[in-house]
Image (cartoon, rainbow, N blue to C red):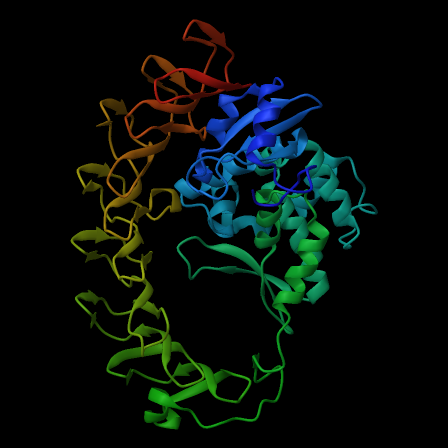
Length: 491
């Protein structure tokens, strides 16, 4: 497990495990199923004294049959955490910004609502401005509140509020100000300070709402400040008088009066420049702002005219970024200057196209609804309708443009689907309440999952309903085994 919280000093031997099982340990197949994402085929048994025994399966021969005992509180927390990590991974929410954007009601508009969000947080917590005074110490109070209501509820109800409050604590600490990054496919708020690199309140909150350990915003915020403090070298000329050094690489081939240096690396080499006109850098037509590595290789820039990268042609005003500079030649992402086709798909101008290291498209936004891998996919610039692809080129995630049948079941338009690398349906998020196999499924709820045999694996009920002869209340999370039997119910 991620962090060991076992009362046994050493891992239990096979003999000790069998003795515990023989003495009356109760099998918990529901919890064993919850550990499936670990791929260790673990079996779970409930012991007296509010404890759980976890027995390792065959995948790791050296551990097979051995086990550990966990305190119930920690084990339940781990199971919830594991399910959330698995869910986020399948929906492409492993990163902090993607995770926050999924739950955020305000998105990039957050910075125009800071005061309102802080006031609402104080009211929700029944705390005064003297108690929530933007100090590091006040973050202990906020952390305790989040622990009290649970991270699941905090994600749903106060994610933006936490980002705003933590952000204000960090802003005062670094003597900075709020800005919005509009360069990525999902604009997000961050902090700028003269002596710090871009500082991310979202990182702090995401880390604490997604972690396994108890919430500690104070430590996470302090770590973010330390990590983002600028070293003596990497600063703007205006902030510190770095002695200019001659450019290297492809930049050295340009006339020095063709550009203006706005930032330098610590050794004085040009880092960020603004071209005074249209220029060619290593055969790439560029204009506006560009960035270079210490060795003078081009990192990113804007095209002054149409240009071919490998087999893909991009329009003028497209902003591109390399994986490891122009010497590597592989693109990391391109913000399209106009509507155009990418790998035969019509893509929307002004949106980002991301690429896998193998240069297959990783994510893009369609300019018009269309079929991809036989699935009708919705278009638009909103983050939620972005198409995602596996490194093998197969569709990984999309929003249905119209009603469509998958694994023998009809899903409504607006449904977000996640697929595995072979095209199999993994999970679904419904836009409206819908019936699957006669069971009413709640709209927008995470957890509608399927096994590779097409059977239901997990769902949340839209209303009270009879399932396998037993009635469950609306909102109940149900898990099934591969044969369709209910193995877990969580109100």
